Image (cartoon, rainbow, N blue to C red; front, side, top):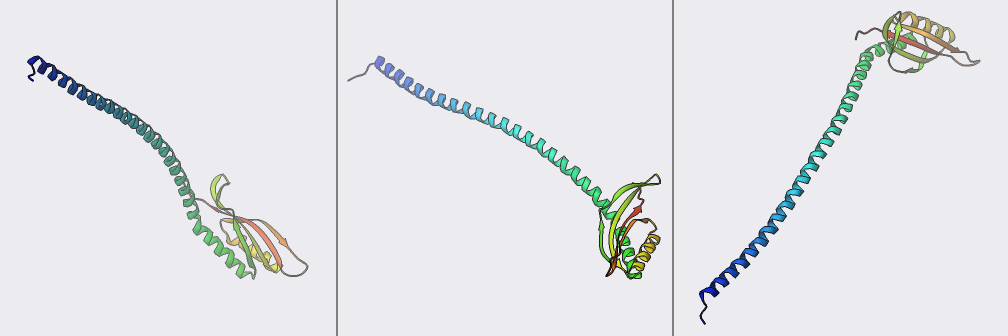
Length: 182
């Protein structure tokens, strides 16, 4: 059987239409998938930018707070360190004076450094409290000598306890002054 030119043309057009329709379906599917992937990519980029900006702003705030705390700690540490030699000297004077007067220092406490006005001048202060035990005359001599030996310190109060038996004890409150510019 012989196929006419017209039939060949119809068959060719049919094959071409089927091929074109198949290619069009593949292209449409590919194009749809491409748009979907582009939309997802754009959405992901926007979320990433927002997350990074929010996280960076939060991290910046946290780092600024941490820096302020570090600077504050540094200032406090410098102040404490500047007092370390002074408090060692004060402790040395306390123990030397106690030894010279035959009394025992039972306890020494300090609330830490502070500031106080002395005759209109702002000074650093080191408040101390101590409990001393010994004979009454030795306790009185200790407090007197301590007040005289501390050029920049003053004994603010003395509370002497005289028991009916045993050694007497004294609780003293004193302040050591120091002027430091800055």
